[in-house]
Image (spheres, rainbow, N blue to C red):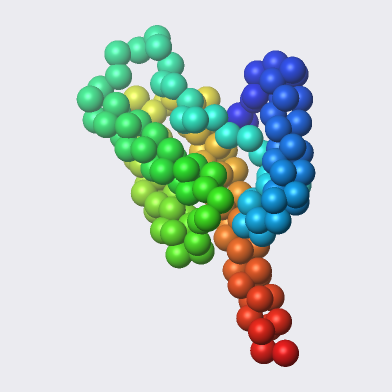
Length: 156
């Protein structure tokens, strides 16, 4: 499981999330408020990249390429989750990348003979990607529910 580090960093991150909720409520931006509220409920903060590979081993080129691809998938999905004006279609694209490409890459690394040396890294990375996936699903569902609510209001 991803650990924020020390307690002061974790408290600061939670405080930042609560502050985002406050700013979103004041600004009146429904999408910002939705994303911030889901972050508050889930208490999820994310690092800028996936965990580094352990330094104790000279990793094969194919593993390094898989790592780079995973990092890119994660960073693109994180940017989509972090945007205030994200739309459900774009979020679905990144969910597909996390569900398909990232999962396949993690599975391939696990099956590789070198994968046995990466058990802890694989677990940390898979849990991080799963948490991001869950957050994006929640954010997307919240946006879709807003669209449904707006449409039903206009019909009245």
